[in-house]
Image (cartoon, rainbow, N blue to C red):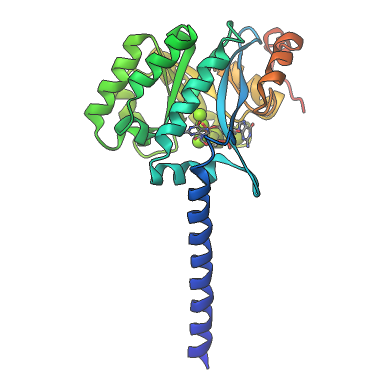
Length: 287
Ligand code: C2E
Ligand code: MG
Ligand code: MG
Ligand code: MG
């Protein structure tokens, strides 16, 4: 009896697996039509300078509106696009779209996420150069965000590409800093312009001494290497104030704005600044 029960759950498990595989396969197929059928779009999340309280840039985040499933979050389709190679045209589309949008906000920097495969198989330098030229956008307004996964393979080649982009004037940021296993080593290998402290650390800010100390150490490390620090996932005023005290340069997160369509960014630029951060340096508990 025990045996048959086991077999039963194994079969159930196998069916589940099959279903997952089917869904993935179907999504992968659907993704092929996403660009031609205009199902992709970018949203923009404001980045705020803690010294001035002003929005100084946006991170461009990819959105997929699936015809029947609705919004599919990037965490669910980026890896599928990587597996199928579609990430190259999709990644190129993101860069072109971001550069086109940048024309509407001449005062803002804009950041795009680029995945490892686009570095290895794509022609990222050409794509970036062409997109900037086509839109007449200055290279120093574009920031490319990479995770350390990008340096795990073909390290020399990747560093050469990063160096070329940097020579063009494009800025390079290390995303999700602290989550991988050799983040520190990569800081030694390449002169990043910015370190983005992963949001998992910010979530612990003010709750554990360990989180506070780690964040402080990363900010100080960045400063001594001449890199700007950005804290991701800032959800409260208290976190923003604490980060400002700690000397963090820049923040982004739901407190300042969720990723939003381009039209809302326009309103945000006109209506808001966060001078209360600049005005008040004293520790203060707020909600
Ligand atoms: P990421 O680059 O680290 O982006 C930050 C993620 O955190 C975004 O999720 C953003 O919506 C979310 N976030 C921002 N502020 C807060 C906050 O205060 N609290 C919380 N809980 N979350 C916050 P999203 O848009 O779902 O993107 C997830 C990941 O997908 C990104 O992580 C990035 O790695 C990847 N991704 C997004 N767009 C692209 C793209 O165009 N190309 C590539 N290759 N990857 C992308
Ligand atoms: Mg990012
Ligand atoms: Mg991140
Ligand atoms: Mg991430």
